[in-house]
Image (cartoon, rainbow, N blue to C red; front, side, top):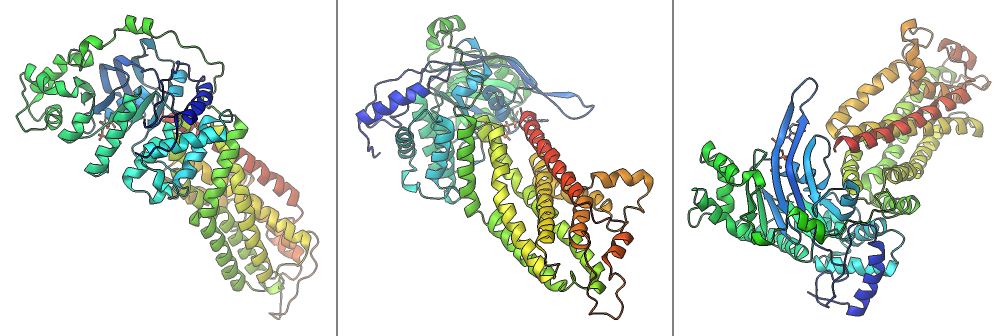
Length: 634
Ligand SMILES: Nc1ncnc2c1ncn2[C@@H]1O[C@H](COP(=O)(O)OP(=O)(O)OP(=O)(O)O)[C@@H](O)[C@H]1O
């Protein structure tokens, strides 16, 4: 491996970084750095020992249904500096155990998780650990280096200098074999490279404990070996690396120090990988020569050799409390020894999980957002293109409709079509794209990159320029092509209503996209718009709405939008319309038309206020939904 730094640089970086590393409450000590060591700028960690006792996890299977127990009072011990595999057949509870141990899931958990012999303090634990999900939730439109820089700024905060961040990034990229690909967009990386980038992003904060959900899934055997070798190296530097894994090959299996095998939420083996065969011999279930022991234990866990064989494994491992089969059982520290060996961690002064301030987080989230917006062909380029295309199409269809007395009804239809376009285009775009963002948000927020407040503020701010631009292009084109009244004031009113409706549509999209998946969201968004259309006063006038449905018109943002448009085009004492295309113009006098559709035409400010309040309420609602979503996965 190419090493381009010398000891001095590494030590300088170390001094500054160890200052930042005061935050994790478990003391991080440093070891001498020798040039040539992988990730030499990362201060080494004191190994952390994780133990769990009588760990049970239950979920509710829905309204009025019983609770289902997924983990059944299991025990286990994961010593520091070890690469540990959690194995088991599909549905055995591997991911669940990983989620519970990492603190990703906290509801429905019973039992104790101990860190160096002490009960786990979840806030402190999250500061020293990271969780790498099975699907690589990366920012696809950012290059490897951009991804790393944003992560470094968000995770290390303002107290670490630019030079130190760059040194750390370079060191990690070299160590993980990504240095040559630093200018490649994350979406163009191979599966193995994406996995390494996911690991690299979390390595920036130098976690002591790493949880990885199936890091080898979807990779070829060469990439699998590379990733596992990398994890082993990270473990050998003092980290506790715990990952779930499906059936590893015999060669890959040997790379792990320790293995924890689950079967239907029970532990069937815990110990060194080399001790698995002797363990199976001791239970009277010997593994045949040339048979991969990793395959054999999974077969046993799947009950391929009968229920009795499985029960005897659970009994022999005492559901995980038997530590006799560890690589060196004499080195397994008991609770009291651990308590004495590791002094009580210093309590952190702050309760926030993130290492950078709100302003700093917002700045870098905006920076990332700007890069994404510039490169995004759907959210930006396509959105602008659709607005131009639709404006031209509608403009030619309704040419002269704004000025001509005989086409007042056509123009009214056009105004409603514009309203639906502004509302639905932004809403559907958000519904379709936000679920992907949501999965990245869940990962990054859990790994302490930023607070939800900073994220939400960035989403809100970032959408304003592009919404204004699209709305302005559309409004100018349609206004001119359909020959609406050439008065700045009327155009300003028309544009203001359009923009507010765009913001309403986007806010509804955020609520639906934040809570639902793409399929449910695509179904729900148009369905929820139908009542709004019913109450808009378009098909049935507001006067003709039955009394028991009148309330609907007060909550319909489309009603305020339509009323605002009609006010802008036909209200404010508009003069008599031209009548050149027909011998008789029924609506030559705008007042007559307003009376017929039961709109006064002087309600513009009321409509603006109603739409602004709607945007505000929906924005607060979207924030609450995102917060609830984050809490619901716990
Ligand atoms: N919210 C839930 N409601 C009901 N059952 C659940 C829920 N979450 C998990 N389960 C069940 O818990 C069991 C363990 O799930 P888990 O995802 O942990 O398995 P796994 O061993 O990781 O499987 P795989 O290797 O296929 O990913 C499965 O039977 C699953 O159906």
